[in-house]
Length: 459
Image (tube, rainbow, N blue to C red; front, side, top):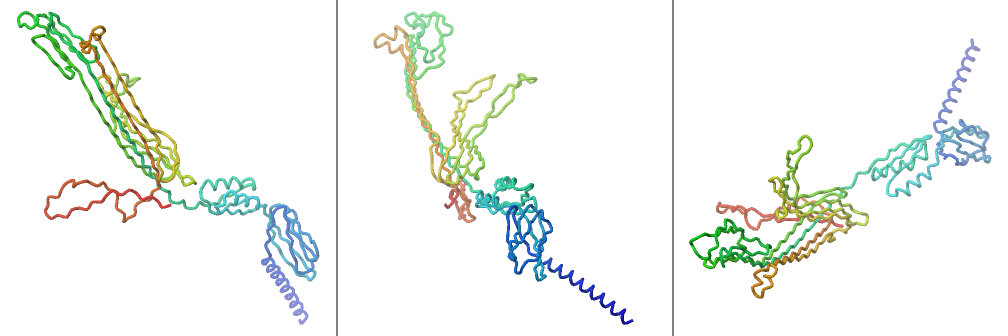
């Protein structure tokens, strides 16, 4: 009975020792050191005791050999992980978890040199890479992914975009200044005879409109009996004189006129950096259009714009300049060159437009277009023979001279502007006098707020 009890106690001690051994082994495994090795690279472990034996779980991943009695050489052969166990001569065991990763230093250096202002981190997991960090734009993230693709079979892009900065506002101030001066000088004489010297007739150089005869029945001068001659006067020119006793009339055109036209337009337009903006002030006029096909002969109405138009696209460059594509246009209705078609009067358009690319600093101005048009038109007409008679020959000659001079300048000024604060006066039009005076006695006068332009940005 006593022997049986001793045998059971021995077995229990054996089992307890085995359990403690497994627990010690698990504790050692839990405290294993982690080592990272790049493919094709080697590391040396300094062991505190003399080495008795080395074992690795994956020889095709990590090659572990003793270099000296207390140095272990680990060489990464392929991607993966392995456990390296080292026994010392005293019986001590140490565990090392070795992870073999791809050599990412060339990739990290390439990303740092390519994107110095962005934080891009690279991690490896077997044959795949992961990009993490924060970049300034989606274009940077796409380019970083393209650079990392050749280094692994698969690349996971976990890059996040930084919050974009507030876009700067750009105001473009455009000035159209046009001065149009014209002068006309004309002189001509048309003669009319309703029976002088028993002759009915007229003389004209055809430069100016002459009276037309109608129902010519007789040519007895200065008499009421007999027959009479009739003329229809459609244009008396400037001076019309008629002597009934001589049956002789004269139409004289002596004209001098001077015209002056000044146009000044100042459209201002605000937009963000790199965005298109358009501005149009004016109207539309109807234009009849004939249809074809099954609706041949039908007339539809289309509208054409006129007025002041401005289109531009600004971009702020790294040199703190503003590069713009500008298309300003000023058009007015020109009834002098209108066309009448099927009873419709279609006006023409007098247009001045420019399209160009310029680059200016903030607040700088540039004349992007200029026109100096100086024209002189002179016409002279005469009746051969009669116009050569001394003194009286001037009655058979006519002359007209026209001079026009146009000066046009288009000036642009870009500025980076900031919005008005809540306490700043708002840009409202100011009136030189009250629009509707207050008729109530002792009523307070409303305050006027002068126009305030947007604030310029501080550099």
